[in-house]
Image 1 (cartoon, rainbow, N blue to C red):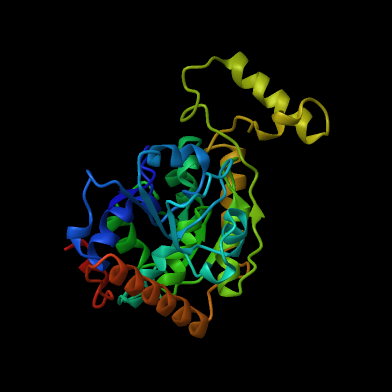
Image 2 (cartoon, rainbow, N blue to C red):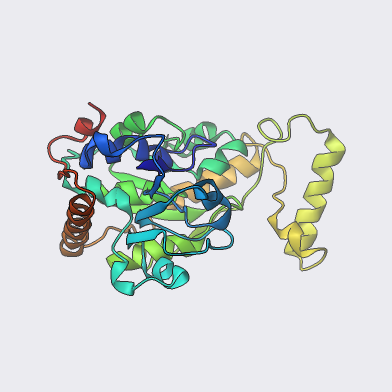
Length: 321
């Protein structure tokens, strides 16, 4: 098989694929020359992404989700082992019983050694990193910035030391849930896709409320090559859109702001308030059931393709050996 995942920009959820499958399935199963495609962690069931699988004779789907753009045509080549949630199953016309969990929950059998007295960390969506200096805002709020663009080993190691996670990134919430660390979701940038959160969280009997921050971009970090007229125009468009005037697409245009000025202070206060909001964590029983079900499907997959599979155990660092 050849494992396909998003690799255009650094993102911890996508990068996990490089490590996870070589640990739970035989490395002999994977080859870049294979005509069997494999889709694991990520929101990969979209027409645009799946164009890269056009030459595959077989496409295996394990714990993947849908959500971005048009769906691919699901034909006889597709071997749907399991998907992230019921919304994905319905979207691609798969049996609802194939909705189990995000494949990252295979990490749920590892020992994360999560303390209860570590820092409160903030994880933006990877696309939101371009808009502002999150480290500066988090310092103003007295919180710890954790970038989803870090190498996955470094990211998970730092996450495991947190006592609470504030996250705009869905896999920030998923990894926190796996580590049994309470998490609070929030919205900031225009790339936030709430439907995929519900696709995943409903499988764990969770219905998180997404509180929205006042989004902005800092000209010191974003559109740095543009002049003052450009930023003034965006400010006006954003104001008009929020007043119910102008074009609909203007609603997606964030106004400029300064992370060291009022915009940054307002976001810092928002993050501080988030620490007092309801935090989420899946129940222990359903967590164990979902993880066990993923491993059942993994064993069935390995048997069909004639290779060994194994359940992860021991400390988290093991998957990076």
